[in-house]
Image 1 (cartoon, rainbow, N blue to C red):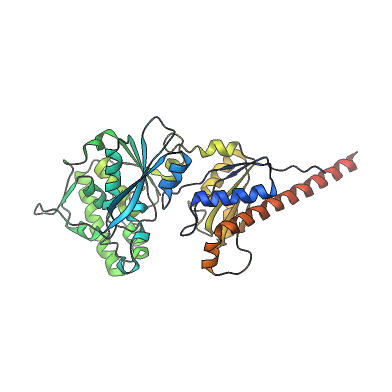
Image 2 (cartoon, one colour):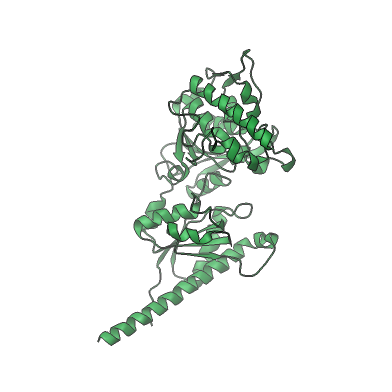
Length: 406
């Protein structure tokens, strides 16, 4: 009995936070698919989301290069970091992953005060890319440990932020309450020659009830009093940026201005950065070199994945974005997850046909993390065998219907 099976499968997952990078997730799933279908064509497209791992993922996907650097970390101490130069493009495109210089994972738990942390290291990475001749800098926003309105990054790029007496203020969001004037006369000279693009969540805004201080401040360690203090400081910073910066839009509540603790506002007003929806920027073949839509069109089935699938997944997570694009071309999508949380079935409404957890028996989180690749491979094999069974049932049912008609 012949059974119709998918001939081309695209594996397009995100990484599993604090466990596996997107490349490892994609490789493990591909191995499981091939166990069940040894001759199938499997295309792997690890998806960067702008947060941790973005630079490495895009460098690997485009056969680019990763450049190591030591920068000022979010708490003011040196940290090892990196930026990437993408391959496969006539233009020199650099990727700066803000989490690699100012991410929350770089902030010790006992020092989590978003009023004190800085994006200075992000500006240092951008300066390194500029010095290396980059024509375009793509900044991935996500997993930040800061709330300084991008002031630190601007300071590293040569901007001077002055108080009412003409003295330079210190680093950290709390200092912005003293900001009175933004002096851009000594910015890095090559900034005028390059395009700066931020891949961000357009729903994040700098100020107001939904501003970054009030929404993300508590997640980054701020007390209610510190949230109020930081919100007031960012309100003042927005006024300075609108008066002295180069942005023409609404700095306080414009789309994406709150990205990475306000990095979006600082770079838009300070250096004229473009704020783009993260997946439009990261999956744009003309910018990142990743043409996901073309690869989806060639597939019979797409498998995506993330560490946890729950009610938040439809709100801009990688599996939902993959499914949205697949719907345009009528390609079915399956999602694997480390865990299925509250509201997980909501993903069916965004086009994911089926979901499955890679964990089949109760186990400690540490054990699941340690065995993540094996669990993913086994889950992918089980999933494909279920698809084969469904194909066999469908074929048998179709044959019986034809016999009755005859």
